[in-house]
Image 1: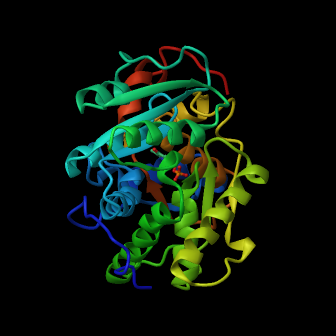
Image 2: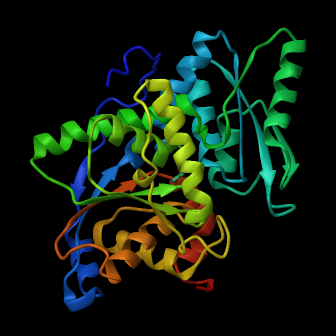
Length: 344
Ligand SMILES: *Cc1c(COP(=O)(O)O)cnc(C)c1O
């Protein structure tokens, strides 16, 4: 598939590494049936460009390019408090000489604190132009349109990016990632048996599904929900994958190409659980790679849980997509160190 017809900015200088995790694999096997587990590999999308990079970087390459092509001077987007997506959008805006404005949805009243550290600190340091805090359940699209109108009345031009950068254009970032990986695993001579990816606002998972279908890749792609169980998450991913496929002109996405697991994000989006703490500690202490508490810790908990249930064949090669998220780890230090106990 030729992505060259879509405007794109480049924020990362080389493919992100695919690495084998030998010590983590060994530790995981010890808790798998019969002491044999899958062989775990990792795609280091936590090393993408923009500071510090993560999956939103890939979406922003296409979204920011589209904003520039339309002559926008401001990126408008939305997210939860500690939004990685808002921080990476701001970083892209700064790099492109644009301004950024956010609408932050307080799903828990009073939970957005400017001085909270992590991403919130970076919003201020990188000079966000405006943050509008709205209550949980607000119409985020309407709140962003209002900001775009305010800008227009001042003779400026805003470009609205939906939550997580998950629309058809943003999803192209993960079609590009699939094409990047296809070259990597061919060069490495490694055939993966499964790929595990986080599934939230769905641009990452949905973009990968479109990339797999468009490039005729048959490796099972397993989403792990970070805020919804499959009955609610899979239709979202399917819709996103189809929107990306329509933009690319590659026809219909088979519904069965979308597969996800739930059960690892509870009690609530962004609220810690014990499996997440175990996963964050296990990868940090076996491989020196850090996960975050909101997304990748729970996604890795999903991989660990599936391995322990015997979901993967013994010694199957499983690739974990590390989607980034490091800044929020600093806001949950006591929890990931086990000083503040959490429930299952
Ligand atoms: C946003 C995010 C995800 C989820 O990706 P979506 O494209 O929203 O599904 C996973 N990991 C991290 C670190 C994120 O910031």
